[in-house]
Image (cartoon, rainbow, N blue to C red; front, side, top):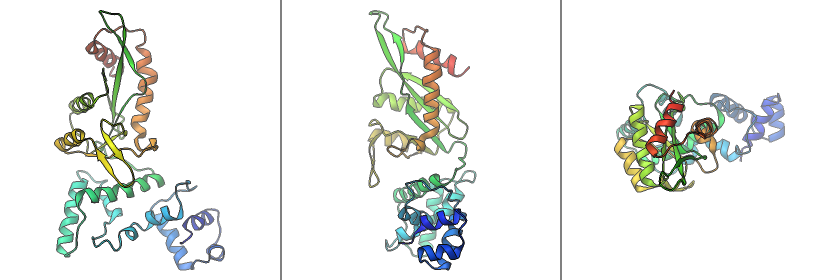
Length: 289
């Protein structure tokens, strides 16, 4: 395999094309092509451990992984660029892709496959550069790690309050609500209330991999909870769970969760609430003031 990593690292260290050629045995033409392509796609150095030669090849030449499938390759750079324009969505771009395929008598990828391949490309793209998000494009959702507390009026027992957080990365606008359970009913209700608060719906939802929303999320398969999937379909949004062990995939909501856990819940430690409604009113006074 071509030594992508060594070529890019040597170039970054100031070695000439002649020296790189002598060290790798690759042709000057190919080395130049890879360096220019990496610059065009804004591959930043130092490279992470994740960016192996295979990883870099798939990122620089994504069409290679689709060769021989019988389907018309997807122009990922075009898709990524168009998504930065106002009112352009993946649904629209897939429709245009299908129209182009029909005109060329080519076989198009189905919408779900189209999204999956683009997602894989976008994950690599995020690892090499900072992507500017369009307002309203992505909504990150999660449960806060820390819990609040209310008092059972009859028994005096302390009852846990689980805190739902939804955040738009572009603006950091967030919604917070407490629930007595993290079950599916609470999860769906929290989303509905968040949409009501924001006055609209995001194009993409990025949840953590909790079982109420995502049953399985691996490189080979993504299985959403059927009710959560139905909710997303109802609102016309697409669920793209954060990768397991990749907290940067939902960095905005992770940051909001830390803020809420550290400041808001801590600020309420001396506030006594006897009902969930009281608790949510109190946290609203703190969070939205």
